[in-house]
Image (cartoon, rainbow, N blue to C red):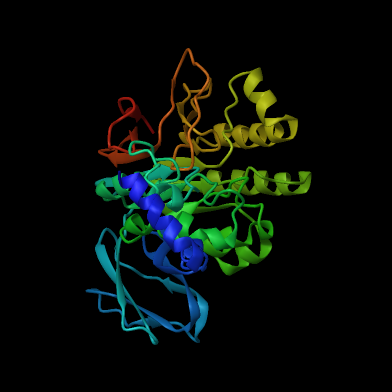
Length: 391
């Protein structure tokens, strides 16, 4: 009966054109509330986007530091906060010279020896609600298809200090017009309490050469202008190296490999972690055939550096399921987390490790010198027991 009533309502509204605008106007604007990125023990960056030009000001409460204002009005906001005290749970208030709204963001300045550090990893989340299907009552109540906010809500309940995204943030092609409904709005819950870093996925580069992704996630304006999609952070006990698996030339691959080797060699945090989109541990010929020879060469080059320089864990996406591969002969462990809310596929059977078809994310925790990683589905259930990893 509910579906029939909605259908009649839809037919009545159609002549007015109201249905055509159902949920679409605010979905198309590239705007967001303030969020945090580029985290570090003593620093973090406030980012955000507005439809009109505004001047934002950030104030870190309780440390006696003066407010940090933008120098001039803009639509793409960036405020760099430095010299923050270590291991403090801070509130950052962001205000605008045009709006009366003040936003409160939580940030924990985790040091290398933080007693406990929680993080979450999600990939391939880039779907969005199919509003017309929902309106007609045809959407599945159980399926998280095109509902990344269901996965994000469970992430938020854990109170993480850091969010990592393994790429393909916005489907189908990383378009700027889809960021509000596919990323900014569904991720709003967790972006109020934790900073985010992301690696670029193959879908993210299909619009404007990836410029929307760089606008949202690039750690600095210089990186965005160069379209260099590799960087790293030191935050809490983690050194996170972010790699680009979409390279289009031998020159770019060689440059990234040199950078990655130097970056990992100089890392001082207890845990070295690699975040990349396409999995770099290709276990058999079928996986190599699937990615192709060029992509396979990129994966092999990145993997060789990760193993040489002591990376403990690789987080990847691209495959739309959960998978844990057994450690390689050199001790490299890979988690594939491609069930963030776009769609999920059935994984091929595995004889070692674990593979599950599920919408999910990874929950990582470092406590008492030990790292554990557990896959959690969108209803909050573990897909398998947590994997414990020694440094």
